[in-house]
Length: 225
Image (cartoon, rainbow, N blue to C red; front, side, top):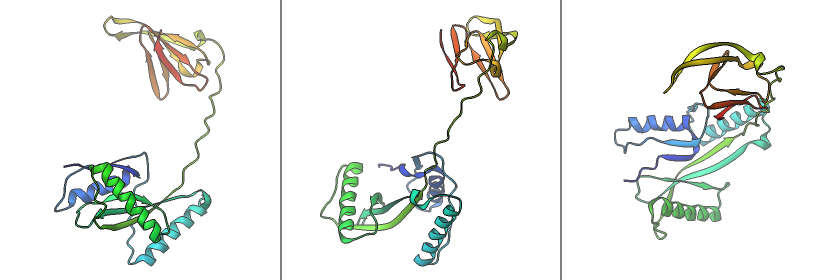
């Protein structure tokens, strides 16, 4: 049995919901769906009585995006169809173009044959194909945040030294270890181990034989000396 568990379009929260549906099915092939798309908001369940109600719901959500400052020209819309050979109990998701036309239906069928060949190793071009579900995904890619480097500290590495204590490093055991204040380390500083760099939210340990370098971005890069 070949399990189709990886999804290239859906976010993990949506796939988690699908996993719950599969798990509660009376008859099922157990599998755990996982996605390639990181992040994502929890899915919203919308009960629509017909296609018109569904269309109004989608339109309203798009208008809400516009009110939040999202330009409609920046919204990416992708379409897909769940397709299968007549008589199959499972589908393959195939990307399609919209609006549908006879030519685009034929293109979708060709895409299904190609996907079936890629996934299962064979295709049956002479067998009828049925389209089970259609889906439209609206996505707005958020702009990359602009990170400003932290204000550089002044002084020297020695000015950032705040003490010393014994710390254990295998296999040598306890050794005298210098303590440093992260905020007072200037850019380009080199801190030789054994050392401990302290800051409010974390502690960085530099083992013996290693050195930590304060980069322009403020990152602390540790490598062998």
